[in-house]
Image 1 (cartoon, rainbow, N blue to C red):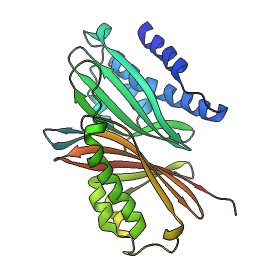
Image 2 (cartoon, one colour; image 1 turned 90 degrees about the vertical axis):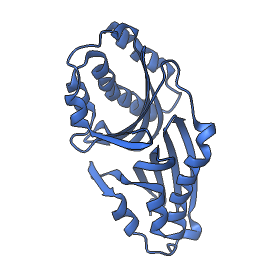
Image 3 (cartoon, one colour; image 1 turned 120 degrees about the horizontal axis):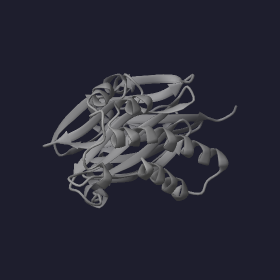
Image 4 (tube, helix red, strand yellow; image 1 turned 90 degrees about the horizontal axis):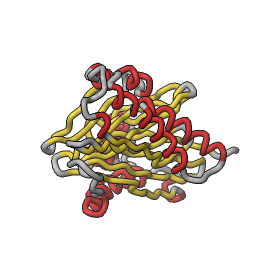
Length: 270
């Protein structure tokens, strides 16, 4: 347990300089994710239940090119109930990659004697509490994670470009290419979770550009990538406001696709 407390202190010192509100949110995010860290350190699945948004939250990964998935309750129920025999040799770190309003992306590295996990968490602030709504991860060899951004940039960007073209052209097929069939969109509405399936989302595009398409600016940034998992941000500046989309992506069957999107929309005052 002392090692976990020490890790939290290190995280606090490493937090980036920001305004008080931003610092406060990042501190709250780290505090929430500590339940996830403690779940690993103690083997107590109740820590996972405190930070995952049950029952909607899911976990996704790629094995032998195929997508794997598990519900967060299945994950919590599979906890050992006690620390691992090699717990003293296990190292964990948390990095808040980006925050926009009530949504965030977090990276957790778990460096164990026999394996290294890179976890990307999509988080939402619901009822005043930060919760994990989606986890995508990569499993690699022990030791420091090997970034795959430079080797995989083209494939990741291709998925983001289809998503952007969907917005620019209003053609839903771009969204069906960019998003994996299991993908969902999550956001906060009136302080509660709202969600939409990929095909519902794609079906809402009219097949032609929106009236304000010419006045809308769209940009993308790949935030991080390790192995078969990645995270990215897409910003849409339109006449009525601004939307920040956070994406988690996986390389399934050799193709990068978005498996989860959370977003925050800020409208301009009239």
